[in-house]
Length: 176
Image (cartoon, rainbow, N blue to C red; front, side):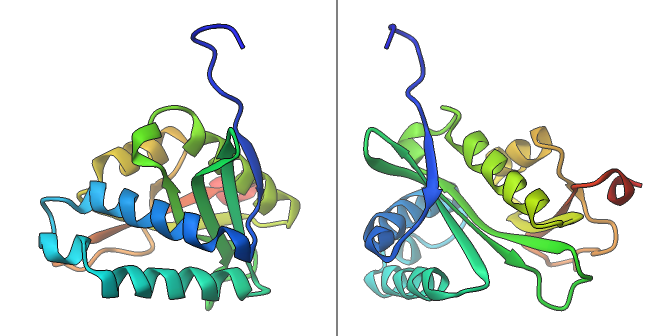
């Protein structure tokens, strides 16, 4: 590879064997964007890490969820998960998680994961995608804006809300 050429990002379906790598990546990414916003003890809490590990194990075992891993040089450097949104109109998917190794932010990994998610949503016939992003996570909000996400005007936040609802139209009809 020529100097300055970005490393290739491979996107694949996650397996149970990825659980520890996914958990570690999630905990590190979460600590980076929540630092200064939540008590430090919450970011380094072993019980919290165990809860995230259990959550990812549950998600990996679900038949109605998709979990994708981004790899570079054989290492998991990103993860995304989504599923049909419960209680939403047919054709709506929910992006539940999208995390990139914080040491590799702005290296195209998140974009590669996002493109793979979009391809999966479109091939499944989804018309709209939805997500919630932490209000103070400005880098994530900017990332989603660059990829076409818009505030979901049908879901007005509560005055004390910590998250912003975003929507991504996937079909021309959904964009109207």
